[in-house]
Each structure stands twice: as C-alpha cells, then as structure tokens.
Image: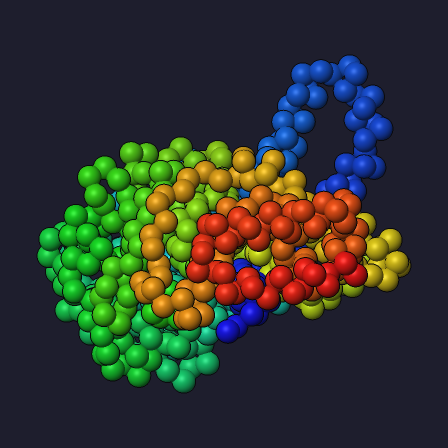
Length: 392
Length: 178
C-alpha cells in the first residue's frame, strides 16, 4: 500500500507551476513600499479631499477581494510609443483595437504590455489598412508562453521572432505573402515550451486562396507545410498538431460542412482521427484556433462550442475522439459575445476570454470547472489578444 | 538586474515549487493555491531584507502559508465565480490505482475545514509533531490533537475506501506529541 504521505506528495507534485509569481510579488512589494512612503502626505490630503479619497481607496479594496492586484488593464485610445530597440521587460499580453481616427499612424498595429505595466506598439509589425473590412482582426502576433518573445509578421510580411529582452529580431524561413496577410485572419500559436510555432491562414472573411499553413520548430530543423491554409489548432510540445483535414471550403463559417480532425506527428504522419461532430461541434463554432486548441502534451483538445445560447468547453481525447468532461462556466455565456480560447496555461488550465465593451480573461480548471477571472480590460475593447500564458 | 530582490528571486526559484505543492494541498484548487502563494510571496518580498537577514525565509513562508490558509475562507468566498458540476474523471473503481486514490483523497480533503486540512498536511505530509504543528498554526497542542482526530474521522466517513490509507495515521498519532 502506498502511504498517506506518499499520496499527499503526489497531490502536491501535481500542483500548478510557479510561473511569474516572484516578479508579481516584487511589483506588489514595491507598490506597498511606495504607498508607505507617501502615506503621511496622503493622510493630509485626505482630510481636505474626501471625494478624492473614495476614488483612491476603491482600487485597493478590489485588490484585497480579488487577490491579484494587477488585473485591470486600461486600454488607451491613442496608440502607445514604439517598442524600444534595446529590450524591455517580458511581455505579458498583446492586443489590437479599432482606431478612433484611422489616419493616426500605428493605430491598427498590435500593442504589447510588459510585466512592469509599460505599453508599446510593435511598430515594425504588419499594419493592416484601417479602411479594410474587419481590419482589427488582420495581421498576426503571438506572445511566447514565458513572455520573452514575440512572433509576428513584420511590415514586409516576413515572419519574425523578436526577443523582447534583448531587442534581437530573427527572421524565420517562412515565405512572405503580403496580400494574404492583409486580407484575412492569420493565427500564430506557440507550443507551451516555446519551441514550436504553427501558422494558420483561416479563410474567414475572403474566399481568395491563402498561403498554406505551416508547423515549424524555431531551431529550423523541422518545417512542415500543410496541404491547405487551415486549420492548425495549435502545436504540442512534441511537435504534434491537430488539423481539420481535408480542409473546408473557403469562408469557413459553415459548421455543417466540417471535416474530421486529424492528429499529425511532428514528421507529418497522421496517427489519429477525431470524428466530425465531437463535442457538439456541429452546433457551434468552426475548428479555428480561436475556438479549439491542443493541450501542451498533445493528448487533449480544448474546444468551445454552442449549445443553444450557452457556450460550452469540452475536452476531446486526440487519440480516440472521446469527449471528456463538459463544463458550463456561467461567466462565459455568449449573450455578450462569443468567448474565445487564449490557449492552455498548463496541463490543467485553459484560458478563455470574451469581449463586450471591454474584455475579460478567465482561467478554467479543466478538472474541477472552477473558473476564475484573471484580467479585465477597461476602456477600448480589444479585438484580438495574445497572452504569455505562463504569466497569467 | 540589481534591485535588492536577487535573493528573493533565487529563493522562489529554488523553493517555489515545494511551497506551491503545499499551497495546493491546503486549498485543493489550482487557482486558489496560486492566489494563496501569491499573497504569501508578496508579504515575503515586502519584508525581504529583514527576513533574509534572519536567515530562514522558508520558515517564514511556511508559517505564513499555513496561517493564511486557515483564514482563507474570507478570500475564497469572494474569489470563486462559477463552478459547474464536476464530472467523474476516474472512470474506474480500482482504488489501488494511484490516480484514483489521489483523486479520492483530494476530494475528501476538500470537504474538510481549512484548519483541519492544515493540521493533516502538517502532521502527515510535513511529518511534524503536535507541538510543532501547534506552534506553526498559533494554537494549542490540544487543538491540534482534536482537529487531527476530527479530520481523520471525517475523511473516513466521507470516503470509507480511504480506511486502509489512513490506518497508518493511528500509529503516527499515538507517538505524535513531539
């Protein structure tokens, strides 16, 4: 018999990763110290400015309740300054917004936020034409899980990987296609380890031909070009990836025409087929990276789908297509806008976000269904986001 | 980066996973474990220079972790937003299977009070005696003894299949007043 202590140790070992906790604790300590230094001055000010006191104290109360003080993110109307060339702190998230004034340079470019709260725009990133339809969904950028790298298409439509801590930009071997990138939605996803990238060209808005999707490792040893532009639903740490194959017809928002999913090994061999309709997918969203994403170990696919007016999160076993526990987090119902997947944070947690007059990011424990709000966007509404999943 | 927190970063790098494991045992939920440990680490960082001078940051962290977990209900009540029905992930009745045993124990512990969980973790995971457990939790040895008794009785009542696993605790308790 395995002893109680051994069983407790096994439970402890299955706990979540430590992630960026040290840096968050240091930031909180610095804020606390700053508050302590200015407390006497504030006290004097509070006597004469009661209204201002209420305004200042309310955020502190929210911190105590939520336990995570750096949750709220205010999205400014004006684009921030360009990312400095000499390097920054790691990036915790990236997003796009719609331009208030379309003539403002950089308004349609991706914005990034560092772990220290500074905001920049990726000035050498591809900038969609703000006159284009759904331009805030065009272009593509993905933050690596640890926040140290950005993968994006630059102004010449070349796929680049930027180490934000050093400012060093590396161009990948992926061929450029400026027209395709400026015309339809492109999805870049990182593997959890940060060793692999998948680039998916989903024909959502246009029926024009797209470039073919690619799965590649950053060391440049493995580059697999798929037969069609979509739909690669992320890439696992071992380089395996799920693909909807054969690819659906252009303009993919036709769930009834879905083909089955196939799991491919890193070398391109197919080894499993997930039947079409698994996870009630026939009622809901198409197989897009925004709604379906493979787990870090490649064994499960997290899938958002519709059932009536409700959004459901299902887990599908990628080996046999079996649908796992289905959770219905009430915070994620779709009457305010369809939620999207932001990726897996770890083997047991999926990050889901929804936007509607602002946006919110939730962490869903796939074992217990406990859903916790992690981030809130205030001000302008972000249209696409990418998260450093290990830092959320 | 020289900012006075180098030692803190090293400490979290070295001991963070172990502290997270303990936090996970104390809360039973991944998000709550993260939030509990985040609160404790924030306090640690705020007092880091003094704690580093004292030379035993882990003792400080562990004490804070256990004491915070006992009052965790205040935070927990406000943190959880939505819980759907938990599906049965075991798929088997074979209690000898390690993952099933782990899951049953985890679910049973989730139904204990925070103080009962803390006592069990200290006594049977950290392998501390009653006196040391009482010192860490800031209560009397008698309280530890009674909480241990009630916690084990409740575990046996919630999950009778744990009886064999818990049998060894009887001998540990009889010699536990270290």
